[in-house]
Image 1 (cartoon, rainbow, N blue to C red):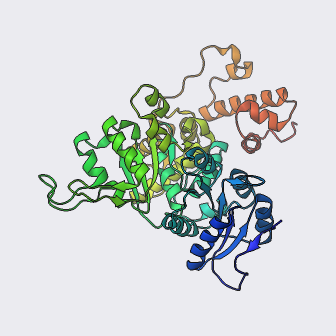
Image 2 (cartoon, one colour; image 1 turned 90 degrees about the horizontal axis):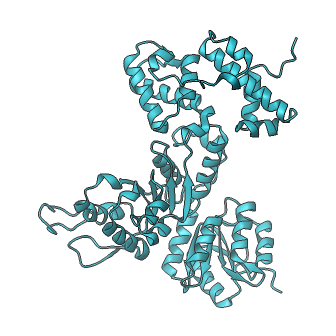
Image 3 (cartoon, rainbow, N blue to C red; image 1 turned 30 degrees about the vertical axis):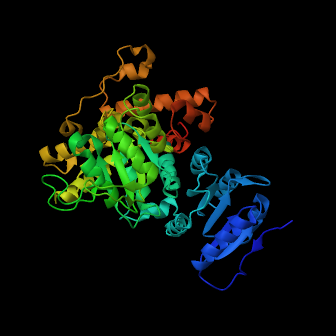
Length: 469
């Protein structure tokens, strides 16, 4: 049994090391010859067990694996690499027409896939793209880079979202971002692009709902000078402008059906023909799409093509609403406020406790965008450095009329300041959850719908850890 063979013995060199996993000698030879001409060092294995031995013995910059191997599926190797070598891009080689396998591999964490028969041009392009991936960074390192866009917050939904974005950035799969208006869908798309192998190329953002239907084809695909009245110069269009990079289609559900057909063809064929030209041009674009509508409902209603939906929605990323991560609101609000102060060249302002309490309990139908608008309006109207609840001009959330659920202590303290009143409510909720869970903090946090870390912080703030005198 071949336990993994080296096509070329390891040398003291900086050449990228690539692992090929396939049980067909012809395929291995073809890949070895092509990659050797590109200056790569190649190791090969005939099965998954051999591949694991090689992965444990040295570092690789890329892995190419067949989907069908003697001791399992290539998908199993993709999952193994995702768990044990997270920074190693892996591409799968699939039989012609088996897109289901390719999609499953992408969802499992594969960087990309190559259909059989293998195109040498596609192979070379894939290798170059995979090797240009930026190194993975820890969250602390990533946030330390002030010039890098990021989503703020320490809540569980936000931490999970950032981790998913980091994973998606190391893939070439199409991503569909769902979420309410103002929840940061474009920011998430830009983060995926900036952390991807395409980070040095163009990011083109398009609002599909803002383009008149009669201009869509020329705006998306471009036109040649003289193609129609007013075409006084060549125009590349969104696809050609984004060549090598990322095309972000915001509010994609607003595309009319005739345009959906044309978009589907370009995605499938990776070819664009500008209006007025006879020749098609190849385009290499990663598609990220988004909408605040439920795209699956649009498909069911016949407003969106099912085949295009499956092309765009290879992997779905759901953006949490601001209501789902209230504990992050103070941090986001203070960061936005500081940014607005810098942009308007005024002293850095701060939010009083009562203002933070109001902001934390507001429901934000427009999510982060609405929070930004509230603070921008407040700054324009408030000359003070400290901002209170009166300056925010937000409606105070009404308390339940049925006071039977409130404790006698709360009912007696109607004259408390708002923050003290909210603190008392929070304190009683935590005590009740701790009693229900027999002081198991993990269970108590689950009852309250918050993280254990958040519960620990709130208990410390409310001095629930101190022994009573």
